[in-house]
Length: 212
Image (cartoon, rainbow, N blue to C red):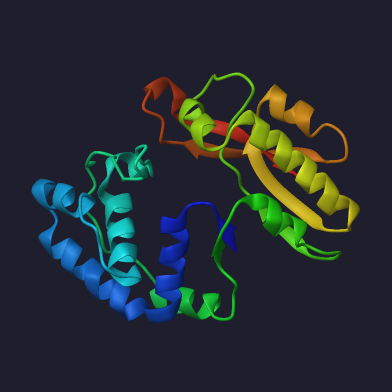
């Protein structure tokens, strides 16, 4: 399992290795949550992976619309949101068990996909960027996953396909993406709710592509 976001990957590792320690910090965040506390935690430099994992989850659950965004210094900079529930129906014990023995890394996608062999299965979920900026956070996504990255991903998946790797990917339902995957892949559609955009006209039910 791989993602380019080191905060996310470290959180998986922390839950895998000592989920009770992560949960204990989450309980404290729930008890102390307030506007002032949120910004205090947002500015903290936590000392170990367990406090950082709890910080990541706390901020993600109480920030504006659950958005993950960092500034040029790599600092989380999303303002506080309206939700106040920090502890949810988290089955960290089962998650920890599921992650045991799994290789979990923070990496660019290319070396991970290139390591897949015949009869492996890849699920790929890139940030949604398209050749024309027309919805939600595509402008933001372009900074972290450019159109050139989309083309590089397509080429990488074609190589994997030719090695006999099975592939399922989600991506934006947009003509530029459909054109990018028009040869060598099967396209279908699924409905989903779009709730993150800062502009209300981009929220609501929408469709996304399933690429096989």
